[in-house]
Length: 473
Image 1 (cartoon, rainbow, N blue to C red):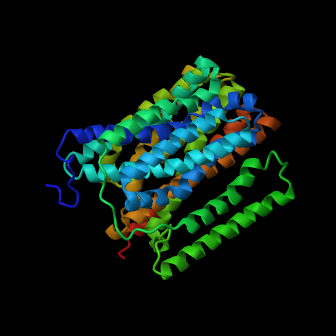
Image 2: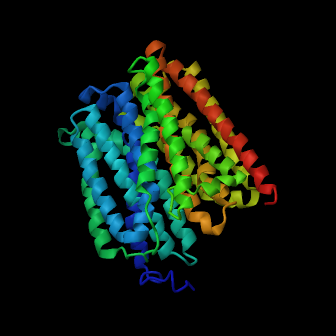
Image 3: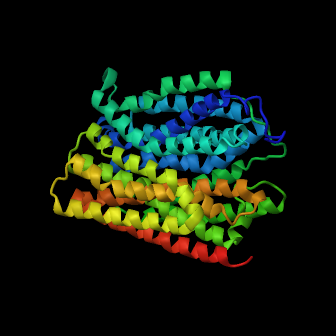
């Protein structure tokens, strides 16, 4: 029986599955938009006369905006109610998607994507908060399994839908349709949520840390921005000054967070968590893993479309077998992790490294790999990612005390998106620089080697995390 504090009018009703469909649809929309841009990048570059640096920023800024406000979005749901903030987030995401589709320059599209990422930070945290309230019973496992599968399919759907919309050129919109499609989808979610989604209980005493979010955002821009635009500016000596300044600002952010905690406030990041060696090493593993996550899809997409001239629709469909392998692996990775612990994560990373080696061998020996061949050689990476991604959060958060689980989860989510953004910036700049001076094939081979190195770092840190967890506290 659920406790009184978690019981809602929908807990024992089949209607809560309708609520699940609504909030997971919003999560799916966010996930799709993290990937849908990839296959449209060449078309965007031509239509908006956007530079390679701006193309990387279109993806990275979306993740940075989301990362810096995800904790704030969760707290706003605690203060004003998850339904209210969810509706505001979906409405904002829908409107900013339309702004993206109407953008007339690379700079305007970057600003619109930043706004889209920040509104996603209002919408997405309410999804898990709603699921926690509505499924406190035996149905919880099934609900979160559905959530996990949808999350895994969002990336592949983003590629496929993006390729389809760019190819069909519906209404003459071209690449703009990848953003306009969120208009009707967002309106349907809003209408359904108004009628069906319940308001979760508020948590009195929750406070915001808006100055901390702003300081972190400025610091991250200072560090990642030069990586995105360095090539375009010829890597002038002064380009390193903003990076140094960004590092200083991040250091000041940590100092501000400590001072806020000392005054009895609620800092964006609970720095006491970093005193736990197992958790800290786990976060390092998370950073290495996600640096090699979305950046992998970026460089593969750029190689297919720019080097091989594969059309957008075919390029998007290449990722479907990978997505299927990801879903299959993620469905049973949790059970395997309960029996084998972090060894399953290490096995998944090793499988990804082997998959990257197969891709590199294919690219090095076949002058122009076909979409079918590429789809086949990507499967190993997808299966390896599925083995890691589903149980990774549970393994990293295992050493955290129950009263700190919320703060640790927020820090975990922030780390994943910052790492994704950093990976996009580094690998995007690397690919474009090497493709310009050598070839797309060489650029991809170098990127694949560095992606493998990041996964080796993940394995090392996971082993250190495992050792730290075995030491009595």
